[in-house]
Length: 246
Ligand SMILES: Cc1cc2nc3c(=O)[nH]c(=O)nc-3n(C[C@H](O)[C@H](O)[C@H](O)COP(=O)(O)O)c2cc1C
Image (cartoon, rainbow, N blue to C red; front, top):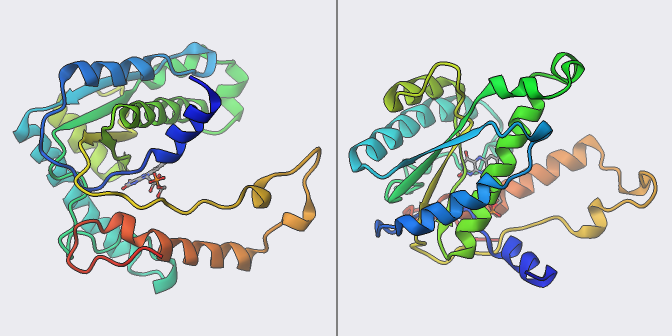
C-alpha cells in the first residue's frame, strides 16, 4: 500500500451511525480482526480479545443497555450550557438510530493483568492504566480502518462505567476483564459527510513549541462550541430533526 492509499483510507473512514441490517460475511469479520491482531502494544502485551456478537437477541440487549445508560448520561449533560453540550444529546428522542440495526457488534475486551508486561515504574507512576487503554484504542482504530477498507461501516461506542458491569454479565465476561468500547459493524445506510478536521498549520510545530499557535482557554471553549455545531449532523443520522451539516 502506498502513502496516498493510506491517506485516502484514513480520510474516507467515517463513524457510521445508521446501518443496514444486511449480514456481513464471516470471512470479512475475520479479516478485520486479523488487522487488529497485528496492532502494536506497550511491551507487546496484547491485552485485547474480541467477542463477535451476531445473535439478534444479544445485540438487542446490548443496544438496550446503551440506550438506558444514554438517558442517564444525557440527564447530566443537560446541566451544561447549551453551546457546550455534546452534539449527540437527544438522538433517541428525535428518532436517531446509532447502532440499532448493525448486524454485528464486536465487543472489545481488555485484560488489565497484561499491564504487568510493562516496566514496574510505569505501572506505579504513569497514571492508572494509561498504556493499557492506549493499546486498546489502537486496536479499535485498526478495526475501524480495516472495516472501511472493505466498504463496511463501523462505530466507536464508548462503554460508560455505569453499564460495563451489566454488559459483562450479559456476555459472561470474567471479572478481571474490562470492556472499553464496542464496535458495531455493518453496511452504510447513508452517505456520511466529510467531518471537520483542524488545519495542519494549527497543530504543527517544528523543533519547539510555536507560541503563536497557543490557544487561550477562551479559544478552546469557542472551538468546542463550534465543533458541536459542526458534528451534530453526524450524530443525529436518521432523526426527524436532523441538523444540517455545516
Ligand atoms: C476515544 C473515542 C471515543 C469515542 N466514543 C464515541 C461514542 O461513544 N459514540 C460515538 O458515536 N462515537 C464515538 N467516537 C467517534 C467520534 O465521535 C468520531 O471519531 C469523531 O466525531 C470524528 O468523526 P469521524 O470518526 O467520522 O471521522 C469516539 C471516538 C474515539 C476516538
